[in-house]
Image (cartoon, rainbow, N blue to C red; front, side, top):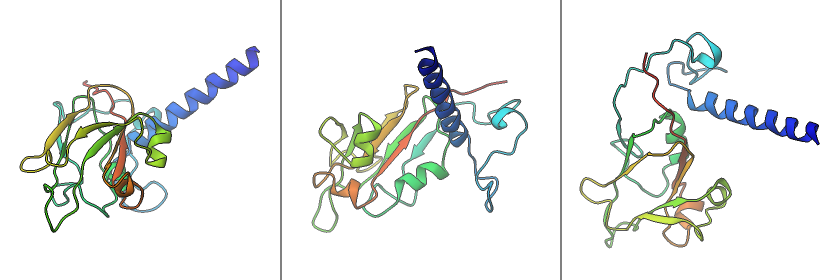
Length: 176
């Protein structure tokens, strides 16, 4: 019994360490095996690293050139723009429903399985179809936990086929 518990603990520590390493990735290297890795000294590139952004950030989902839209790979965007920090604000901008664009919404999914399968049954709608117009609507990353976002329109079709989903796990800010 002790071996099973100990093995489980090692697995949890390993998974958390891998997630932490992936979240610390930056864009200072663009090619090869270490592309996107943080090249500072220390354990996983963490020791002695000063965070240059002392306050929370306001981040437009998809970047300023890409509103929340069908066909843009938001998972790729989130990986390239990591890390995200507690109290950062995600801004979702999208056109209100009209005759020339698809309507969009934003859902917060409860877990990784729901995220992988674009299952909206237990998801919570955080952005209505009209909320993204103008300055968009904001979601503040207040908890240290994974956040799974997806477009819920057409019963998850935009999530499944249109790549309109991403996840973030905000880190705590470290000030030296």
